[in-house]
Length: 129
Ligand code: NI
Image 1 (cartoon, rainbow, N blue to C red):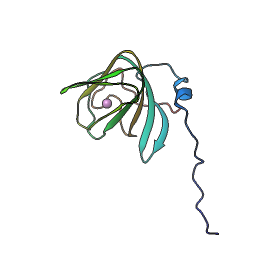
Image 2: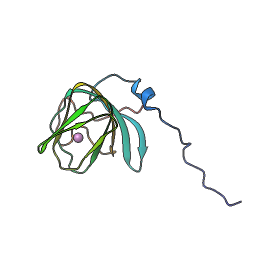
Image 3: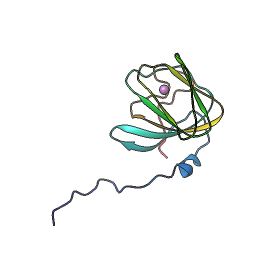
Image 4: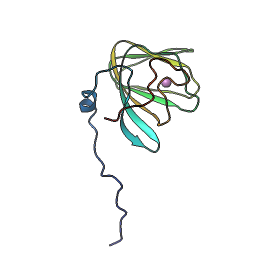
């Protein structure tokens, strides 16, 4: 028998519905996974965010529930459940939704939610749930 390296952590599956039931606040992403220096986050959105961009990070928005409108300087993109949008670094964007939207975000751990902008929406420390 060849020796196999011990896994650092025992893999555990994540149930998105269960995690989404653990918080209610809007615009406050929660970390639910981490790999390769990237975070998997869940967030509930409602209303308008702030225009911003990220100098270093591309951001993935996967819509789980509701309809998200991503405003871009080049025009709006509507994202429905089961669809995702990657916003490349440097591209200004503003998420907007009239009704509540649940999204999964996948982006480098260094990503600040409001990017190059500081506002009351800026979240420096994200909870892990
Ligand atoms: Ni962003």
